[in-house]
Structure formats: C-alpha cells, structure tokens
Length: 447
Image (cartoon, rainbow, N blue to C red; front, side):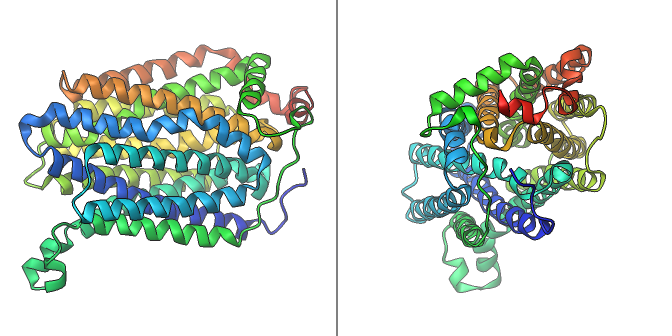
C-alpha cells in the first residue's frame, strides 16, 4: 500500500470532525433517553429495581449488534468502499433519530420500542466503527497514528462534554419558555424531542461532509481474496491470535478494561439518583455535571496524548499503568457518597480513557497490515463489546439487588488488580518489538 500523501492533515481533520459531529448528536439522544427512562417511565424512588433493569435492557440492546455484527462490519470494511459505508450509516442513523423524535413527540414511545431503536442504533454504530477505525491508517502516516488517535479521542471527549450539557439545556427549554413568557416554547410538553432533533441534524451533516472525502482502498491480503465472508474473517483473526499470542493478551487486556469500565455508564444515573449528595441540584443537572466532568477529563487526556504523541518505548507498560489508573478511578467513584469526590473520580476516569484507547489502537494499527485491519479491528470491537455487554448485564443485575456503589467498587478493584498482574506478562510486554522483528507488519501480511 502506498504511504498517505504528504498533505494528509486536511483529510484527517475533515474525517475526525465529521466523526465528532456525529458523536455530539448521538450523545444528546442517549442522554435524552436516559432522562426519559429515569424521569418519565420510572420516576418513583421505589422503582429503583425497574429503572436498573430498564437501563440494562437499553444498554444490552445497543451493545448486542456490536458483538453479533462485528464480523460482517469487518468483512465489508476490507472489501467495500469505506467512505460509502460511512456515508450510508450516517444517513440511516439520521432516519432513526427522526423516528425516535416522532415517537417522543407523539408520546407513543415505550420501553420496548426504545430498546428496538437502540438495537438499530447499535447496528449503525458497529458498521460505522469498523469502517472508521480501519480508515485511519489509510489517511495518516504510521508515525503519527498515536498522535492522530489522541486527537480523535480529544474531539470525542469534547463532543461528550458538549452533548450532555447541550442536551440538558435543550431539555429545559420548554420550562424556560413558560417561565419567561416565550409562548411557542412553553407550549411544548417536553424538551426531550428537541435533543433528539439535534442528533438527526448531526448525522445528516456528517454524511454530507464524508460524501466529498476520498479514502483510499487498501489491497486485499494475498490469502484473503474472494467475496466478503464473516466466517472467513473470523478464521483469519483466530489464526493471527494463535500465531502471535501477544495479540491475544492485548485483546484480553482491552476486554478486561471494557468489562469493568463500561458498567460505569449504566451505574452513573443510579449512583447520582440514590447515592450522591447533590447539593440541591436536580437529577438531570447532577447527572450532566458528573458526565460532563468525565468528558472534560477525556478532553484533558486527549490533549495531553495529542501533544505527547504516545510512548515511543515501553508502550505496553504505559498502557497497563493507565488501565490500572482507570480501575482505581472506577473504584473511588463507586465508594463516593459526596458529589465533589465523585466528580473528581469521574474526571480522572475520563482522563485515563483517551490514553488507554489511543495507545492500544496505535499498537493494532502499526502491527496489523491495512488489508486486514477491517477484520482484526472488528474482531477487537466484538470482543470488547461482548466483554462490555457482559459487564453491563452483570452490573445491572447486581445493582437491582445490592447498592450500585458496591458494584462499581468491585469492578474497579478487579480492573486495577488485573492490569497490575499483567506487568508480569513478558510476551505482552514485548509485543511492540514485533514491529522491528521478523514478524513485522509485512511478514504478517504475507503469512
């Protein structure tokens, strides 16, 4: 494959900007859905168990397609124009957002219709992510991948900061309209559909930006010729893991991180509603503050990663230490009963995430040939999302029986200990040396 052009940055900036735009809208929608489930469907304190199970069902419906369709997404990304996939998925996501908008506005929305829409959103996301993740190496030089991934994490974190704050502001518009005499706003029963409308607009704008972007198509690996086949794709990934056990351990570390940290998204509303002293703030305002600070931490971490460019040596060691810090932050958040401590833990958790994601993704992107990245990165997404889904299901079920803080403490403590134990895993610590060994990228592709 030819190296990316010298003037690679404008294309990368357009690509990353379109992704961040879509993330803002999607974050607004799912913040609105969380508020709808927590304040409209199950508003009473005695409905804690029902609320926990409803949030679990919603999270599971969103995650299931990420696992079930990852192989399909990877096979398509390696054989079909990745730009066309990205444009199509953004367009379909916009249609789903408009559907949710109508159901909310007409008050036809039920838990099960929301779960179905979440599953469709999950389908859009996995096909989109497979094409987007494997496109990065085609747009940026290898030596800049860690930095570009850091910029991507920064933009996503900025989007995550904007999303809950913007959604909270939009949701409160009808109340403000009634208070200040703005008739057309005051007549709206709820501001939730307004937040969803922002998502539809962001999807369609992202599709328009990507429509004019040129993304090169990588050559197929010599052993991968033929029609798209999810079964063949999974077989190729399994052969790679058997041939190079260090990749298996890298995948295991990523899976553990998702298993233990993904439930925090589910547990945050429960902890905010039942555990934290919110200093007189409303539920949605407190939730927006906690989630906004986590995203602000992501911005800070992403900026540091972008400026630093990632570790040049001992990359796996740095990754493991950051994952250990992430586990510690989850543990402290679960133990928090005061808003200030929870906000601090949420910020640190958010700051660790872009370091973790960018460093790990750069390892995959530099060691896996471009013609295999769609399949390999989709397999990574499938494993991590399966682990995240199991973590969410387990945490949600436990949170219906025991205090949610205990669940978060258990998850964070396990991740902390697991990450520290991998400091003794020599094959994993030596993984980055493959880039300069006989098992380098070119050799992997030839096998």
